[in-house]
Image (cartoon, rainbow, N blue to C red; front, side):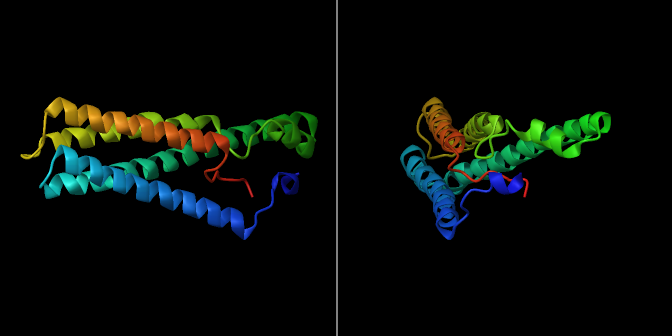
Length: 169
């Protein structure tokens, strides 16, 4: 059963995934620096926050996505275990419980949006408070808006199955 779920796990797939995750981190850093340079020039503190805002939100979002996906999988396994106590057939219970599971993506991918928007909003507040910042509202809205776009892109990639998903084997 588990061997059926295992797709071709070649070196190319892991290289592609590594390049994608690295690209999302690098793009987040680059976008943060670029936006901070426009919104709060000559502020080292703002530059540091802008440098970290989207890589941190990506890392936190991935961690929470994995946690939610793992807890859903654990729930399915416990249901299969309890069902097998009634029928005395663990294999059939596992097959029926895990048959509809999509191993490429999970419903919990939407966790990226609120996490990234919240972290982007906080970063916008911090950067807007720097002495060289432009209009306070513009800085906060710019960081929050770009965070929303970034998180929607990451969520889209996760739902396509391009981002790595924790597998049960």
